Picture 1 (cartoon, one colour):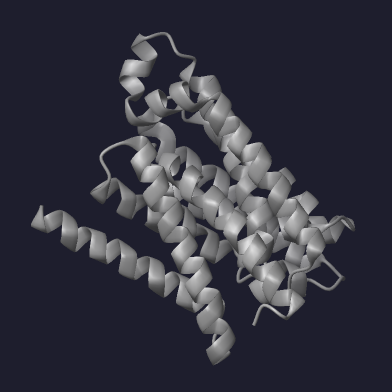
Picture 2 (cartoon, rainbow, N blue to C red):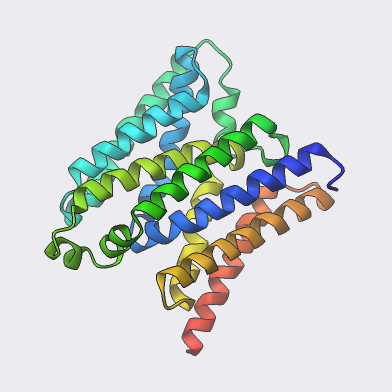
Length: 262
């Protein structure tokens, strides 16, 4: 299996994506932003359509749409009670724009459509380098902002009382999340990004007692899902995304059962 370059690329990129999704997912779950991660993945599809319409690389359009929408949501949802309505309003606008650009584009939009489902097996070295760069940027952000980000994510009121600039932290986090979604969605697809960002971290929240423990569990669960999913996809010729989603669901439901016993 590893004698094929496409499988080597798939495992390398998949490993980096699992690591970054596991770590970022802990904060997504802690900040109750699972809905946002789903919306960002769909907005990325709209951005890809816009990029193709403009004659750009799809990634450029994805980054533009997801980063701008993240900043808008961060500005509009200063109050937690307004967060869902802000996410709905901004995502509706950008999804509508994506449909418009798909309909009026005279160019091949199959790549934009593929953003929804990804192509883990068909990636090259350039995509692997993009994911590596993404991982370095995201991990650097987590390392620099670890304490205030953890405080704000799991005790927003306490962080505000302590004088932490929660609004600034939220916007920077959303921008890094947008970067993560846009880059990784090219490979595993927008739909699967939502799975990797939410289910491993949600399971970790049930079984782990600390933030660092949640990160270790979430990364481990994401790695198992990606590695085993790639192997099963290779030996069966079934979609890799199906196996990864199935494995992560099994991990989550197993964690729920374990949590009930405790």
